[in-house]
Image (cartoon, rainbow, N blue to C red):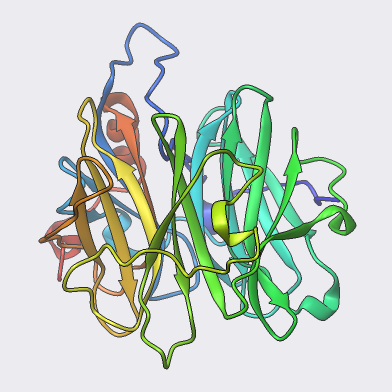
Length: 316
């Protein structure tokens, strides 16, 4: 079960915003989304923020300093607005059979904690993310853990993040080789999934596959064990950590990748069939980001709480 904690570490609160949901104003003073927030870790294993007007050129907040310390080694932060709250999940350090989950009602006060998601012999729970199914009001939570000697994507389902039993988690799909960093977005009537198959040495890079629904991960789960389609031209390898953002009021998506030894890279698509590499500038040392649209009111609040000077401008 998740340990519930209320805190304001580093003397500040955490602000969580939507990953792929449209902004839904709660007050007349809030307007539709007009900017973007990036959550990432690096160079420290804590949470950092950056903002952008175009989801391509990012400026670090808080003068490039962390905005939140979870009390553990925080890696791979993923945040999203769902079910009337703001949610964040992240990896705990390196090899632990648990993840962290946090939630907030007002974007400043938050509660959360750690809970075990797999048996201890599965060693790890890397890069957790979730997809919220509105039709059933269910969170599909997924991550990478050891399975038969390699990393495979595992998952569990919850409606409220309470009373989670690690014994209920299952293998989502198994490629028969290492696979990590699953990230998904709903597109029309399907789910587009990006992930990192293979080991560091094989330099496979990030791949894509399509799912008809959240309970059937396509050929991945049927035994065919296809590693996914190569879609990113000029990708630096080895790379991992694919993350997706839809542009505000446009049928355009950017997919970011996280090269092991280079700055973040990105590609643009309008149909998930063709992809074009685009130039992006991100904060120095940024790793495994997640990005989401925010309102002007939310942006102004962020800038007041985490002011930055010229030293925090993009470095890459």
